[in-house]
Image (cartoon, rainbow, N blue to C red; front, top):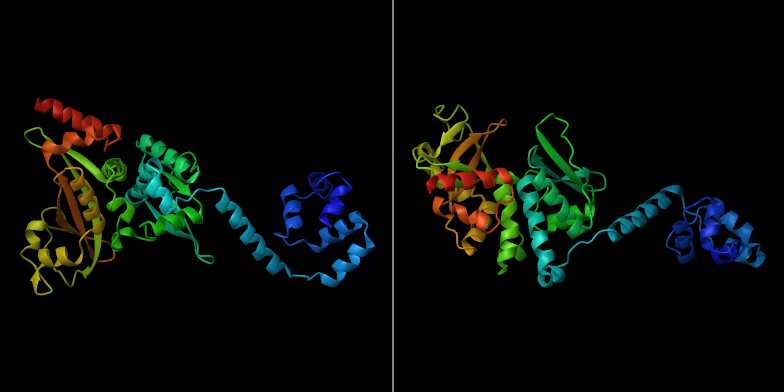
Length: 358
């Protein structure tokens, strides 16, 4: 029917113009991928002008209600959206070094600076957001270029958050990218409340550049530089791990750092579950993601030290462990040599500290 109707106007494109519908719709009607509305069907039959064809369709056609048509159209639209993306497969990540390194950086960026959140609860669709400090435009541009290269997806120019914070944000409004990230370790919701891991293809990689690409977002996003009294620059990474312990489980006297903090030195003196609180918290609420990061540092020849530095009481009355990864000061310069830090402010801080030493 579509072919006979199109023959009257020369081709499917001209038929689409006459019917005032997208030319892709005519194509999908022809191959049977899209359900044809009754109004378009009647126009097609009139244009085709074939009585025998009209009788055949009248006997075989099945009229669907609008609800079915909408659901079917959604599935077609989803397939079209999926086709526009590239979602790296296991084989591609194993065989394509450049793709694997860029994909590793994206996963770490979202783990360190972003999140996966439920966008449409009715359909179970998730989306992804990434947040940087307002001055970290170089990191935003780097992440944007990674998304273009890996997913063929452009997150667009940085946006200001609606709460007035001094930050810039980007969004990936693709359920398929979000599902790919979830499958690779970025669990939806609040990350600090769950055991998180880097994907296996990163943790077990023997390619140094893959390890570097995965560590760089952590160093830039969660790392900080400080100068010791003798001038050496030190580098630390901090991660929170929420607990199920509340004020009644671990009473305390407002401490030196502030009314919501308990320092590590005090935790050794407080009881929790029949043992010193420091031992109990270390056993029950270790930051698994920070342990993975430490393992990657070890593979590159660093000597990181991971320890529980303090407890912080959240607004809901539960404690959150503050875990800290520290790189020895004599290894800090190697972070620049291996290009583990791209953020210009941090690079300058390390160079200034190193210059003072010499």
